[in-house]
Amino acid sequence: MPELPEVETVKRGLARSVLGKRIEEVNIFDPSLIKKPGDRTFVRGLLKKRIVQVGRRGKYLLIYLDSHRVWVVHLRMTGRMLFSSKGRPKQERAIRAILMLSGGTHLWFWDTRRFGEWYLVRRPEDVPLISKMGPEPLGIGRDEFAIKVKEKKRQIKALLLDQEFLGGIGNIYACEVLYRTGLHPKRRASRISISNIKRLRDNIQAVLKEAIRAGGSSVRNYRRSDGSEGWFALKLAVYGRAGSPCPRCGATIKRTEISGRGTFYCPGCQR
DNA sequence: CTGAGATCCTGGGGGC
DNA sequence: TGCCCCCAGGATCTCA
Image 1: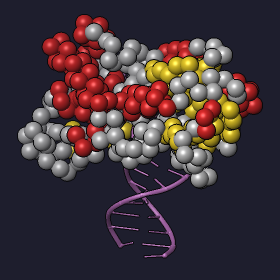
Image 2: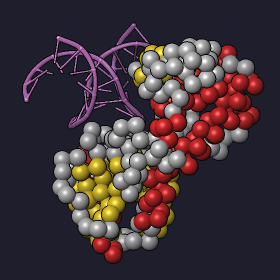
Image 3: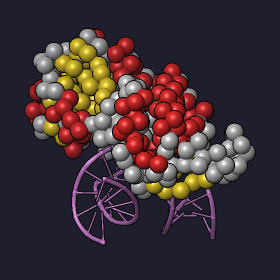
Image 4: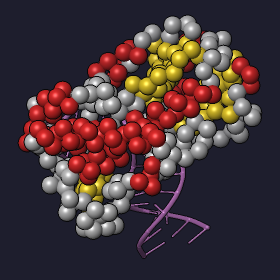
């Protein structure tokens, strides 16, 4: 579900709505949501704490508390962090937890498939994947990126999806970025020319920034924290468009599979 | 090191 | 309407 631009959008929404508020009430309906440190300790760790900062690392949301602890949220496939100042949401199956904040704002976690994860830790790096995570795609330089790509023999799309390689790219943006660069998703990383690797890095940054500006892509389940949709889905050139004509060359967009994920590309433009 | 496949879950859509 | 199969913005684990 949400990738870097979606998580960034949620982060910005929370920064506007819940920053500085105190957590007055915590209701966990599905204890399997809490990965660390166990749900009772988790609830105690949140109660009466103030939210002092909101951040993001890869696809993880980082909510800093005034207790020197970080509440870390991963939305996985269908998670939504939603807020409302107009009262408690109607109870439904997909809501795994509800918080009440000072001033009467409610914050809740909607997550149909229940893959989402919450942690309460001292530092973000205490979450296993965060400690191993590769650099932020928006921060990496051309040369550093080129060196990293050149030393891998994997299919380029599998590499982009690997969070230990770069943190934050997922299935939609991996497809879009390769399309924009004219690279076939199965190309071996080490065999791509330096100049194309640099173009790839530039396109990664351009696409992610455009998507952030659009509030992310609501293809299916993703929503911003105020419940609205991001509209970048309208600009997707290949993702989910198998059978449609390529906007650039008119060839029919194809679907294949790479590391078990649906992969969309244009056989005309991507070599 | 790489890749394939199964697994954790629920729900929507297409075909019959 | 019902049923069955496929598919889904993620990540981990085992096995070859």
